[in-house]
Length: 497
Image 1: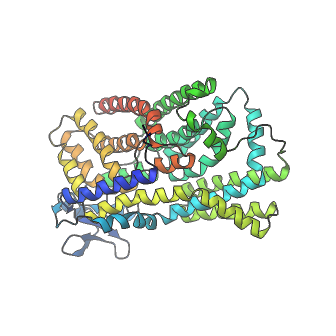
Image 2: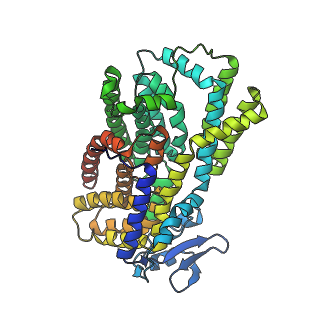
Image 3: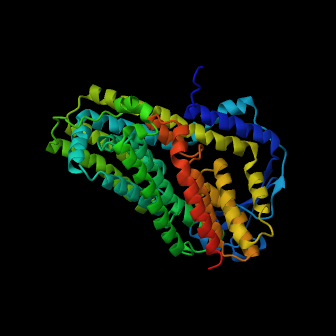
C-alpha cells in the first residue's frame, strides 16, 4: 500500500485559504463603524457604510460613542490605527470570494508582506556569504568543544534570551534568521533539528504570549482597552517565569532523550536529509582566525543593532533589512570576495529561503480573503455576544478560547488588539472583572494557539528545516495541553484576587 505523505506547508495554507473562501459564502458579511484620530486637524474621523465625517477629538465625543478609552491614547499616537466602534455592527451585502479571488489571494498576500519577504531573502544571502567564508564551520567546531558535556546550557540560554526578546519587544518574525545559524550548532551538540526549532520558536512564543513591555501586543491592547499597560503586569511576570520553566523542562527532557538514543528523535527518519542541509564537521581543520572572528563579530552585531533599532529607534522591516544587507557587503569586503563570486553566493543563499518567503505571503493571503469577504467583523460580533451573562470565571476562560479561535483568522497581535479591544474590553465591566482580564485572555489565547497556528509563522519556521507540520504537532501538543491547563487555572484565580 502506497504511503500517503502529509502535505507541504504551501499546500496546507492553500487548503486553509480554500476553507476561508467557502466561509465567505456561509458566514454573513458585516462591519463595524470605525474611528481614527487625525493629527492634521485634531479631529476624529468616523467611517461607516454611507459616509466618512469628522467630529471633535474630545473625551465627551468618545463617551457618546461608548468608547471608554482616554483621549490621550489617541493624541499621543499610542492608538494610530482605526478602531471598531462598539454597538455599530450591521450586516452588509455579502461578498463571497470565488475561484479567481482564491487564486489571487496568495499573490495579494505576498504583495502585503513584501517587507518581511525581503528581510528573509536578504538574511538568506548574508548567511550564504558567511557560510562561504568558513566562519560558521570554524565557529561551530570551537563552540562544540567549549560546551562539551554542558550542551544543555545552550538550550537554556537560547530559549531564555529569545523569550526575553519576545516579551519585551515582540521578537517573532525576526527569529526566522536564527534557524540556519543555530541548527548546525545544536546538531554539533548531538541534538536533533527539532530541539533547535523548539528553542527558537517556543522561546519566542512563550515570550510574546506573556508580554510585559511588548508594544505590538500588551501596550497597544491596553491602550485600546482604555487601561494602563502596567495593570496586571506583576501577574504576567510571574506567569512568564512559570511558563518559561515549563517550556525549558519540556525541551530539555526531549533533548536528553535524543542525545542518549538518536532513534528516539521524532524526525529520526530525516537525519541524513537534515545533515546534508546543515553539514557539521566537528573535526574541521578550519581555524578560527582573526579574520573569521571579525566575520562572526559583524554577523552577530547585525542582530544586536536590529534589536536596538526595534526597541529604541522604532525601526521596522526596511531598516532591519538594510542592516543585514550592509553586513553582507562588509563581510564580502573584508574577506576579499570577487564581485561575481559575491553575487552568486548571495543569490544562492537568498534562494535557499525563497520557499520560506512564499509561505509567509501565502499565510497572509488567508487574511486577505477574510477582509475582502467582510467576515472578520461578523466573527468578532458573534464572539462578543457569546459571553453575555456569564459567571466571571467562565467569562475569563471563554474569552481565552475565543481569542485562540480568532487568532486563526487574525494572527497579527496588533491587528487583533485594535480590532477587538474596543468591543471585547467593555464586556469585562458587565461581568464585574477588571479589563486586564480581557488583556490576559487575549495574550494567553493567541499565545496558546500560536504554538500550532498554521496561519502564523510556524509553517515558515518548519520549512527552513524541512520538518513536517504533523511531526511538529506530535512534538508540541503535550506541551500545549500542559500550558493550557496552567493558564486556565491562573486566569480563573486572577478574577477572584
